[in-house]
Image 1 (cartoon, helix red, strand yellow):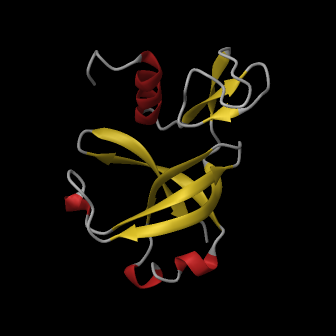
Image 2 (spheres, helix red, strand yellow):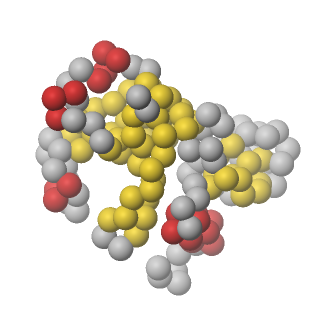
Length: 133
């Protein structure tokens, strides 16, 4: 990874390489931030600490993109979703492991429990989620 990457981002990617998913927790109010940022979005405090995330949450909404843009066109149709983590923060990520025939009916099944999975792609690791049965 390039030396020009900011320390917060570097630590996050380094943890992914170790199989850990990190967020940040505010020492003042206890709120979690994910992906990690050095400032609490709840109270504005800058006294944050690293915290390992449990890696579970709830899929709130989802969408299939049949024509992903560069550099993701080699991925084929991709499914993205808005996930609320057990610790509180919500974010958008890719959903993996959904059979083609199940994609259209997924919005009717929401909310769904999900779990993180760390995938390797193009020389780096990143978190995605899969649906828990």
